[in-house]
Image: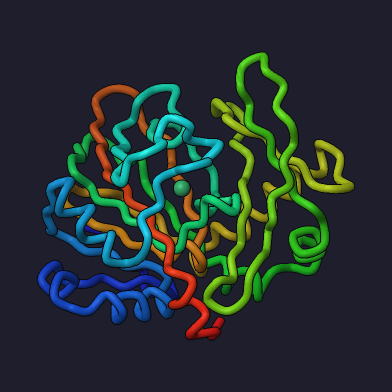
Amino acid sequence: MNRMPEFTLFGEVIDANEILRVQVTDIKSLLLRKGFIIVNDISFTREEFAMFFSGFGDVVRFVTDPLAPDYKSSDVTVLQGRPDDIVAGRGQLPLHADGGTTDFIVDHLFLFALEVSTSDNGGATCLVNYRLANLELPESLRRILFGRKHYMRIINGDVEQTWKEIPVFSGMGRAFRMMIYFPFDEGQPASWECAVEGLTTAECRQYYRDLQAFYRQPRYYYRHYWTQNQLLICDNRLMLHEREPYSSDGQTRILMRGLTREPADELSGDMRS
Ligand SMILES: [Fe+2]
């Protein structure tokens, strides 16, 4: 059973009956205050899951996600630990927020644990309350995060990909977002690499290592070990997330994922940050 650590200043556990009963607008406002919600012992078919999250906004269908070229038209992505798959694999997926292009904007992220074996503790989904963390960021990290351009490049076999600038901060009010892709840990198979304006490779590695260590402090960080029939809803504008790697044999971890974007008129009606 997952329990919110008492020192974590974010996150909420909601009863399965309640989440299906309350208004979506109330769930969204709770998410704005808490960042994420966990629901235990809830069951969904794929269709029921899609029906549930489609009530939160426009369903995002990966029109131009550079990390997921295979998911062009699905409302539900099944994450089942396929080897060699960035999004649906079982390797490390470093800290990031979903989205990154004008066609691929994500406000809410939904993960439902369809099937999970408990043979070991790998495969956690970890969340960072970056808004609080950034308020308390050491000056040396703040100068780089807020003052330098950040880049990432997909690693794709022998094909040389171009560096793409990541718009780290954008928008205002409820459309405010932080977009960042952390590099993979050394020793992990990497699907992309990162660069920062004016930093050498070694300085860049050290910067991300320090920033990651800061974000992973218990005050800002929640590590969620999955059990079957759990639902996690996360406001992608408040949180970064990552997947810890899990073993390639003996562990089943099948999650269904949905992504939604709030309609523009809902965002413009409330400019609280
Ligand atoms: Fe993600």
